[in-house]
Each structure stands twice: as C-alpha cells, then as structure tokens.
Amino acid sequence: MYISDNPTVLARDLRRTYRADNKRTIFRNPLASTEEKKSRYVHALKGVSFLAEQGESIGVLGRNGSGKSTLMRLIAGKEAPSSGEILVSSTPTLLNVSAALQPRLSGLENIRLGLLAQGLTPREIPALSEEIQDFADIGDAVHRPMNTYSSGMGARLKFAISTSVKREVLLIDEALATGDAAFTKKAQDRMSSFLTDSGTIFLVSHAMSTIKSICTRAIWLNDGEIIADGPASEISKLYSKWTMRIGKGETEWAEELLEEVVNAYRRPHIVTLEETNEFFNNRNQP
Image 1: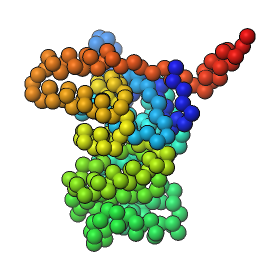
Image 2: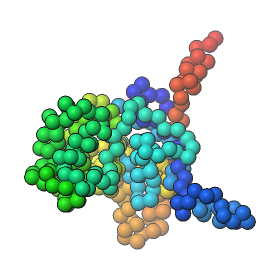
Image 3: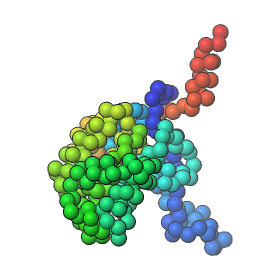
Image 4: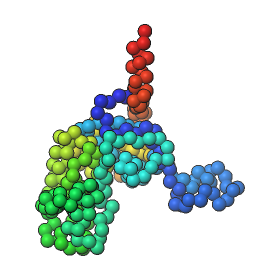
C-alpha cells in the first residue's frame, strides 16, 4: 500500500485509447471481425499507476511511441483518460516546444499573451516581461514575428515564458533540446530553484545526461506501460544499456534485459483517502 503526506500527482490505472484512423464513427462494417475492430485502436497507455510528491524531479524515459507525451497531456489536463483517474494538487504547466506560440506576433506580444494565459494581470506583466527577455537572451529579435525565429530561439522564449510563474507541477516535454549548452545550463539552474520551493517536475528527455543531472527519480515507459520506477541514476543506466544494445543490433540481448526489467518491477498499490481512512479505522478497532 502506498500512502503519501505530500502528493502532487496521482495516477491510478490510467488508460488512453485512440482511434487509429482519427474517425469518430464506430464501425462502418458491422460484419468486421473482433481482430479487425481492435486494429482500429491505438492503446497509448495501458494501466499506468504512480504517485509523485513535493520536491521530486521525475524523468520520463521511453522510445518514441511509448506513451510519454500522452502521459504529459493527461497530467496537464489537455486530454481526458479513456479510463482510470489522474489527480493533481494544482493546475500543472505543460512546456512543450512543439506547441507553437502565435507565429505572426512578435516575441513581446507572445510574452504578454503567455503571461495573461497564466492568470497575471496587465499590471504584473511589464516587470516579468523584462525578466523573460533577459532570460531568453534573444536580443532585438523579441520585436520580430515568431515565424522569423530559429527553432532554438523559439524554444528559449517559450521556456522563459512558461517558467516565469512558478507552479506546483511543471511538465517539460523535450523542451531543453535547444542546441545551446549555455542556455541548457541556465534552464537546469532554473528548474533546480523550482524544486527548492517544493515543486514537482516531470521531464521527458532522450538525453540521459540531462535526466541524471536534474532528476532524482525516473519512470520508464514501454509500449504504454510502466516497466521501471526508481532512482534516476539506476533506471537511466538500464535504459541506456538497453538502447545501446538495440543500436548495435543485439536484439536478443536487448530483449533479455527488457524482460529482466519488467520482471523486477512491482506495480504500486495506491489507495484513495477513503481507503486510507478505512484501513486505519479497521486497524484501530478491537
């Protein structure tokens, strides 16, 4: 049984299924076989359960298509799960470089829109706008339309906007791949200061060095399921070894390692508040 005093994110048996053809109609062919019907669905998440606490920085590992971005969107409330539940202590901030700002507006105008979207008043914006410009370090480009920016400049500005107002839960989906080592260091320092205020960070990244330097814990997703959850240094080492074997074409060894990881994982039993109270009430009864 898993009980926490300071939970920020709780996921219980979280599942997300998509139509493979993106169509809303169920089945055009009433005579379609069961297997044909199943093939029209993509099971992005298959019963994911975990609990995150204040002060934790959690790396989310997995190859493309493993369900990482889907999990981030569900935590952020951008999508609803097909079944299961996801509970958060406060509204999370999702930072995703692929989510574009308004391309025809200038950097300054996007800063203003971004801050208004985070609930700031017009009076609060000028001071934070200056801080964002300094942090993003894109110079006079802040006056130009976003569609004139390089991908790195856009990523830096979005990161600066999204992290200018501290939230209890911050979700970062591949947002540090700016190609700028100096800015990456600044971003890491900013996230470290975020954790000192008892925040919780989820970081999706393929860079194991980033996971090791920022995260204390790592969750490994494979084919929509959590197969490992533990100290970031240990899980990232296993994941690196697995991907290295795949890269070398050592398929059999990679499958053996994956099987060992899966067998070692023990899915947590996370109880609700009602179940916790019932447990203690029953224990205290004569």
